[in-house]
Length: 469
Image (cartoon, rainbow, N blue to C red; front, top):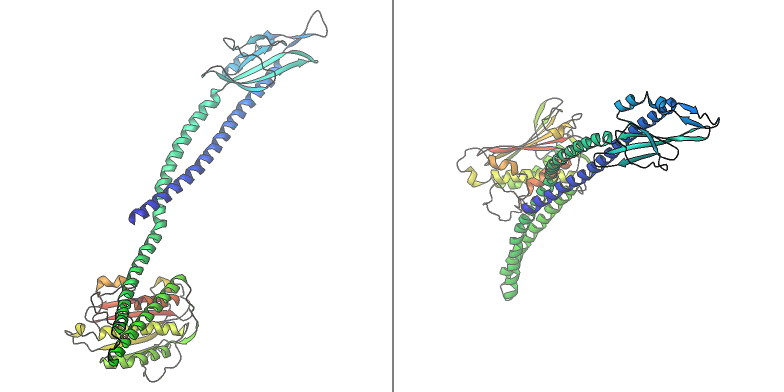
């Protein structure tokens, strides 16, 4: 499976790099064409300027035998232009009206025929001899005097273009390499949540299958026994039916828990938010668990601390405290939250294996307190303009190992995997979902839950809930 995710990450990085490379190449092509066009326009403007200067300096003389015919005095016309155009690497050629070369600044004729159809063109004689040329007809009083051709060496374009192309190739190559490296890093970041979700789902499916396998096998065995021995005594048949009933209830609770967590993950949990008297709710939960706790010799106590008078009140479980601790929440969900935590505390406080070598009393203290906004939790700090209620459930049980603390809110996690998996209707399914459900409920109420523990001395769960979720 790691190979699959690595292959997917490689493909993502490849596509990041490929798309970026294509965009860079398109951008580079556009820049290249723009620079090349700009250089050619600059040379054409230079040639046009030279043509205008030379035209103004041409000396035209009438022919002696005719008063309507004229000619160009070549010596007088081009005498002052040779040095200037030579310094600018521009060459001039003069052709008569019939297209025959009469004068040139080239050391040897180019042997390029005069092209009267294109005013501007690029002529290549060899790999090292390429020119940009402009041909301009010279007329005087409607008489064609000749043709002026101005040539500019093409390397003035190719030299900077080649240098610019090399710079583009080097720059784009480095950018593609950097994009490939960044793409590999970003694909790792992008695929990590998917990878974690996959392995979490895989582990969740394996754990759920494991939890369902044994009860279903037990039900199947009892049913097969009943079918195989129809003449079995009525008392034995009823015993088998009771076993099936208990296991069916366990499966029902497990399925409901899984459904609740799945809906919570997808944000589909229907929460009926309304004013809830938190003190009354805690008293109700304690009343429900009191019989179980007394049967195991555990003392339950509820302390309610009011912020206004900073007064501590030991509330009677048989009477409701004054309705000062009202929050906006879902009564059923909050009742499930505190029932899970209190049942969990009773279970491990009453654990005989954890209390053999201890002299601590079997007790669970529940405290409800109104607090101000100086909360250390980052999540709760978003609601720092309102009051909070802090509920603490502290037991004297065996505690939780430090190595297990980071995982106690994970689904199907058990701090002691070897402990008995017998069904206990008072404490739930024993599937390791109680604390995961508790955390989901706290998160749905925009609160925070933390745990502190000392081995063989006890565990303290602390829940902070905003007054207005």
